[in-house]
Image (cartoon, rainbow, N blue to C red; front, side):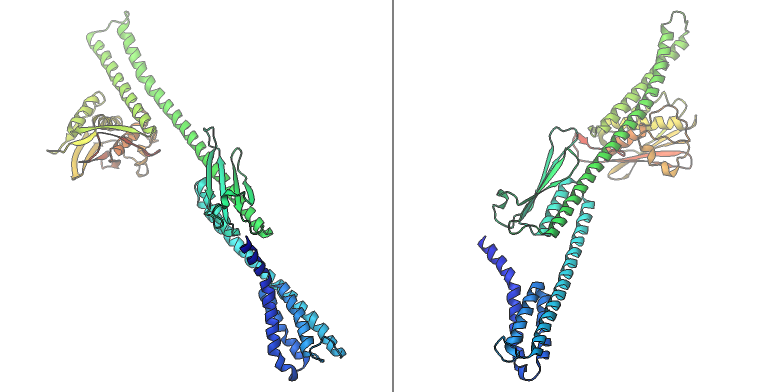
Length: 498
């Protein structure tokens, strides 16, 4: 503390000591001119050191220089020498005018210097504030805002230490989330243990609140520093408020989108469930009715209808279960070494009811490598692709399945059909949830089949896409070969594109 006081005293008296030194040095150099030039010239020469002192050390130093020069001029250059007594009236006038002019020059130069320093300070303040606001605009978390605010305050006012704390309200939590940031202490190592010299509050939406603590014991804040500090804190408060509003807006959009998806899912599922259930109920009622006499062929037809609609319900439930797993963000892959030929034959067998009007043609090269995949999920992908092809292809048209290995590390599967071409801009969107082409009849379907295919294939590390061909379209997907993976793993999937 004694060192701080000594340093402060030296800083205070230094301008006056230097000013006195400059005037005395000028007097020493002017002394030989006493017998050569008149008193008027020497008085004019004294204006230079006075102007220099006022320019470099301010108004007070300039006034001290003017007063000292007044006495030096009288004492050394006006007869009788080495006294303050003046004989001639003209010398009195010269001294009075000299004192008035030097005081005026000191005030003028001092004010100009003060205005220059003020302009430079405001320019620096505006630059620092602009840089601070640019930084705030790019920050994405409350912790980053606190860190930048602490650094900016340290730089702006030269504090020994700055600490910021924030109690943040998080929806769904009972306790406020506590965030804090503190600068390294450049003063006493135990400075932070002492009470802060200044405290400011961060104005945020209730019930969140924040506090800024500043340690600067050497001197209080100037008016300009206090104003700039208030601006920094208010801008940080606004940034925190904007961040909270942005998070609230994002959460609201997520809730709205979630409600929309739920409504779409319920609408699609209710229709999909109602149709097969009504068919099954009608068929069972006919079989149980004593009033309806059925021949063997009709009896067999009703049983086949029940089996078909039951398979349709089973497919729908499988898709819904897979979608719920994907939406939950985790899909468990029960991997095993499997042959693609066996998976494909099983998928064709399970879709035989829907393929009555189509011929399924398969192309397999010999010696295809085995896949390390989830057998039932890949089967579900093929079932969905086949059902989509049967649904949108003309009756009697073939559906081709081509399997080959274009590269050593992947297997490629193409499901080709003769359905109408898809506009280029929709080739990627058909794999989105609930997406339907407007020009195609809605028919039966939830709009989830292709989205589930994409989620399952990407969970296996593969890719899936659609291509327009000369006659129809092709669904293409790839699966990796020879991957060293665990037999069971959890795959996190992204929202909106899986």
